Each structure stands twice: as C-alpha cells, then as structure tokens.
Length: 319
Ligand SMILES: Nc1ncnc2c1ncn2[C@@H]1O[C@H](COP(=O)(O)OP(=O)(O)OP(=O)(O)O)[C@@H](O)[C@H]1O
Image (cartoon, rainbow, N blue to C red; front, side):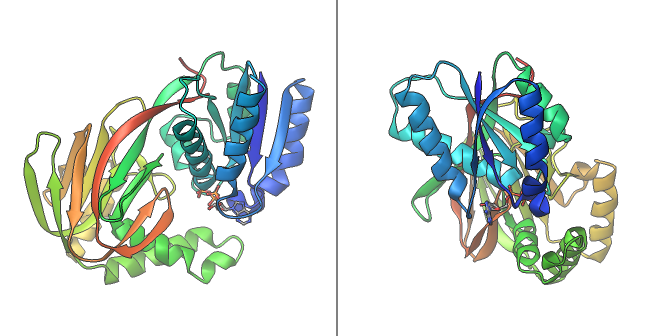
C-alpha cells in the first residue's frame, strides 16, 4: 500500500506543522511507502486530492490510500476532491479509500467514526487496516442556489451556524490558547441574539411539518457537533439515516434545562426539542439565517435543501 498524505500545517493551531516531523519518522520507522503534499491555502486540499487521484488512475496504481492529516475542514476538502474526481471520471473504477489523522481543533468526524484521537493510534489503525469500510456521509441538494455537496459532520441552520460565524470572527480566536474561550463567548452571544424563525420540514414519506419558532436546526451524520457535543446520541456513520434535531426558541429556563439535559445526553426527551432519523427529508426557511456545513460558513440566506446519504470507503480499522 502507498499512502498519499495531505497535511494541513495550520490545523489545530499549527499542529500539522509541529507534528509532521514525528509523523514522517513514524512512517519511515514502519517502512511505509508514502508521498506528502502540504496545503497552502483554504480549499487547496480539494485540488491536491483531485491531482493525486489523477496520478493514481493514470499509473493504474494497484494499492493506494489518501490520508487527510488535519481537522474536519481538511477531511471535508479531501472528500470533496474525491467526490468531484469520481463525478468527472465515472468509469466504474474502485474508489481510493480515505484515512484520517485527526490533528485539528474539533475532530468531530473522528469522534463520530470511532477513529482514535491520538494520531499515533489513528496511524497504526490505518496501517493495519486490510480493507476499507463504507461509511455514510451526508449529501445535500440546495434548490435555493442550484448547488449540491457533501457533509461529513453536520449541516446547521440557526444557532450553531451563528456560533460558527461569531467564533470565526472573534478577536479571542487569534490569541493562542483561547480557542475554547472564544467558542464559549460566541455561544453566549448567539443565545442572546439569534431569533426564532419559521421552518418547514418535509419528511421522507411526504408529510409536512411546520415549526414557527425554530432556533437550532442541525442535520447530522453522527452524534457530535461543536467539538464533541453529543447532539444526536444515536446517529451513526454506519447507517443510511441522517438525524435531524430541531430546537424551538427556548426561554432562559429552557436554555438551562437543555444544557443540563445535553450533558446527561437526555435532551431529546424535552418537549421543545424535536428529533427525527430518516433516509431523506427537506428543509425550507423563508427568512435569512446563518448556515454552516462541517464548520464552514454559508453566510446569511434562506434555504430550500434536500438531504440524503451516500457512502465512501474509509480506512477506519473495521470491515
Ligand atoms: N496553509 C494554509 N494556510 C491557511 N489555511 C489553510 C492552509 N491549509 C489549509 N487551510 C485551511 O485551514 C482550515 C482549517 O483546517 P481544519 O479544519 O483541518 O483544522 P481545524 O479547524 O483546526 O480543525 P477542526 O475543523 O476539526 O476544528 C481549512 O478550512 C483549510 O482550508
């Protein structure tokens, strides 16, 4: 097996840059064949992945894998590169599997897919994986913007997306070591400023449900969002279902109750929390709201989106 590593030097507050010499030594000590590519800008991993897959296909490489070395953003771009490559070159070739060394700040996909959070253990798991496992990933079709795409973690509208926006633009985030504090400050600010909005859900069976004061709307592929918050405890990357959690605009008492129940992983029983698990469904908003996909901002807009899942092979150490 030859491993094509895509390393984001900036992931996890420059963890990529700091850890690369150790990762390289680990690979060399294990007599592993590898090539390394460093990302140089936002979005670079998409182009690198497509170039790598082009080389692998051209040379008829018999046994190759792409390893994303970074956080959820790097993995998302790597997956996007794979999807675009195979969309453009659909000749029934077997797809090159993806592995992940989770060295980012949040690493929610690693948590959700039971990939070890220690990079050494994650790398050992990859090197000893004899076959890839097809994991489900989220697919969306945006009818509002005539576009489509994928998500490994979640697609959020409302509170979580406002938090992503505020955290990304927070001055605290620029100060090393204050990432967590910046996130907490953004949550508090978003709780105070985000308003409820009308949302229409069309279920997989065609039934329509209206939520006049939706507040947090998260479509998720596995349990975690926001760096380890267990928002949908039963969601699984092994299932072809996506979980949808809708929280109505809560009052102060309900915010405390929700937080307390979230810690206990019992929040889904609350009467202002709605939970669904379906193979496909659609969401529509009429007002402009923040959106986020795997932690990347979508800006402020209205949404008319259909959700479903698709599979991709990953090296996660089980078959
Ligand atoms: N050389 C680079 N300079 C600046 N940004 C980069 C570079 N290479 C990649 N990026 C961008 O860095 C962003 C963050 O990367 P990533 O999500 O992997 O790490 P993270 O944010 O620390 O982890 P997580 O998403 O798990 O919290 C990505 O959007 C990616 O496009």
